[in-house]
Amino acid sequence: MAKQILVTGGTGYIGSHTVVELQEKGFDVVIVDNLSNSKIEVLDNIEKITGIRPAFEKFDLSERELTDAFFQKYPNIDAIIHFAAFKAVGESVQKPLEYYRNNMGSLMNLLECMNKYKVPHMVFSSSCTVYGQPDVLPVTEETPRKEAESPYGNTKAICEDIMRDYCASNESVNCIALRYFNPIGAHPSALIGELPVGVPNNLVPFITQTAAGLREELSIFGDDYDTEDGTAIRDYINVVDLAKAHVVAIDRMLSGKSKANYEYFNVGTGSGYSVMQLVKAFIEVNKVELNYKIVDRRAGDIEKIWADTTYGNNELGWKAEKTLEETLASAWAWEKNVRGLK
Ligand code: NAD
Ligand code: WQD
Image 1 (cartoon, rainbow, N blue to C red):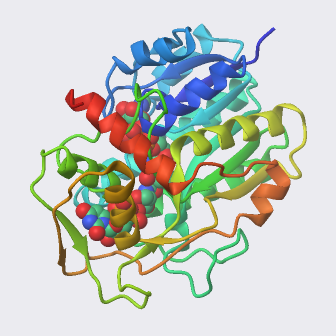
Image 2 (image 1 turned 30 degrees about the vertical axis):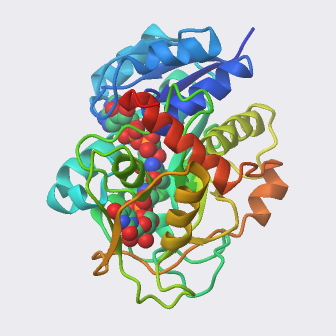
C-alpha cells in the first residue's frame, strides 16, 4: 500500500511543489493548511499537474485539540513534512508572540501527536537563517549557528532545538531538519508558484511583479557590500529541486537509512549569486525590461551566504539540478500566468 504522508502547509509555496513530487512518486498525500497564507485553488492546480487531488483538511495546527482530532481521523499516516509556519521576517519583529505561538506551538502539537499516534517520522522546514552571517564560507552543517536576527529566525533555531531534545528523549521519533537557502522559481507547468500577499519582501517575487508592471521599480538594497559588484550574495535554490530533497529525506527515514534519529542538512546549490547578477540574468533570460535603482542596505540583511552541500549530497544522494537561468525563466512564466500576460 502507498505510504501516507501528512504535508502541513501543503497549499503554500514550497509545500505545493513538494505535494506534486510526492504524488508523482506514488505517495498518498494529506494536506493540512489553515489557508492563512495560501489559496484553496492550489489544490485544483496540483490536480491538473498530477491527475490526483490530495486530501485536504483546513485547520490551525497551533490548536492542540484540532491536531489531535486530525490524527484520530487519519490513523494511517506514515510520516509528516512540516512546512506550516509564519515566515515574514519583518512582521515577526512587529508580532513576535504570534510567530512564537504559531511556529513553535504547531511543531510541539505535532511532536506530541507523533508520540501518541505512533507516527515515527518528520521532515521539518528549517532555514539558513540559523547561521546568521557566518565567519567562514561556504557553510557546512558543522558551521556554528549564530544568535537569530529576528523572532522568525529564532523560531527556526528553537524548533531545531525542540526536535533535537525530543529525539534524544524518545528513540521511536525520527526527525530531519532541512535548512533551506533561498528558494525561488516555480513548477515548469507554471500552474503553481510563489504568490505573496501584498508587497513582496523577497527578491524574486519583487522582480517578477516589477517586470509584470505591478511595481514601478525594484530597489536593490545596498551596493557597498564586500563582494565583487557590491551587492549581497545568496544561494538561490530552485523550488522543484528543493521539493525533491523532501522526497529523498522521507525515503531515507522510511527505509531506515538515517544515521541518527535527529539529523539536519543544508539544502542549497553550493553557488552564490549577487543581487545584481540575478537581476541581470533575469533580464537576459526573459528578454524583459526591469526598472531598478540602488538604495541603502536593508536593516538586518547579511552580506553573503552560500551552502557547502557536500554532506547533504553524499548522505541524501540528492543534488540541485536546475540552472539559475531555468529557474528565473520558471519564475517569470508563473508570474505571467498569474497575471494573464503573454
Ligand atoms: P508559505 O507561507 O507559502 O507556506 C506555509 C503554509 O502554511 C501556508 O499555506 C499557510 O497558510 C500555512 N500555515 C501557516 N501557519 C499554519 C498553521 N498554524 N496551521 C495550518 N497551516 C498554517 O511559506 P513557504 O515559503 O512555502 O515556506 C514553507 C516553510 O519553509 C516555512 O516553515 C518557512 O518558514 C520555511 N522556509 C521558507 C523559506 C522561503 O524563503 N520561502 C526559506 C527557508 C525556510
Ligand atoms: C535576497 C537578497 C536582499 C528584496 C529571507 C529570510 C530568510 C529565508 C529566505 C526563510 C538580499 C535583496 C531583496 C528587494 C533587494 N526565509 N533584495 N531588493 O533576506 O536572503 O532571506 O528569505 O527562512 O530567513 O530572511 O531573502 O529574497 O528577501 O533577499 O535588493 O526588493 O535580495 O537585500 O540581499 P533573504 P530575500
